[in-house]
Every structure is written in structure tokens, then in C-alpha cells.
Length: 119
Image: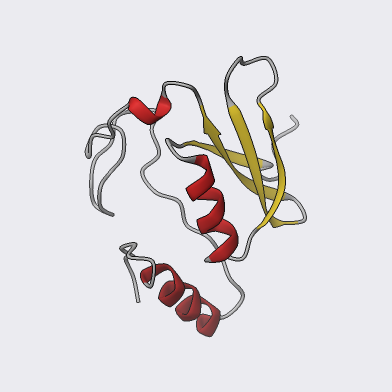
């Protein structure tokens, strides 16, 4: 049986694709590799940010997405131990090569006012 050998991309819904792309490029150092109208879906933007040679994180913004209010515990966990509705993402964790790189990334993220769980 053939099975997946990795994740090509993970697409996250966003109400502000410009801000998401700026955060992932400026703070996390990801490269924006594509930004275009989503194929087959009228009015939706799709942006891809490279994590490594074989995987990306992507953001999708539809015309009504900015008006959808996130609800902690339903649309997202709100914290590391929070529940979410089935089919939603509980959290995402990125890998770096060294502990020092982890601490540096944590500090860059926190400098933007984003809560980081962990060291």
C-alpha cells in the first residue's frame, strides 16, 4: 500500500493574508514562493511560504473570511490545552536544527506580541 511520505503543505484560513505573509517572512524567515488566486475557487487568495525543499505552509483567504469571528474552543484552541471542534487545527509546531535556534525564534515571535508556549 502506498502511503504519504510527507506533508506538501498545510493550508490555514486567514482573515488577513498580507499580515500572515509578513509575519512568516519577517519573523520566521520563510520565503514566499507563490501568491495567486486559488484555482477553481472564485475570490480566494492562496499564498505559499517555503519551510524546506519539500514542505510549505499556505494561507487561504476568501472574500467573507475576514468577517468570520474566531471562537476559542470552537474554531481554535486558544491555548495549548484548549479543545477545538473536530476538523479544526489544535496547534502547529515547527522544527529547527538546534536549541539555540529554537530560543532565537521564540524570542522573535514573542517580540511581535505572540504568545509562545514552551521554553
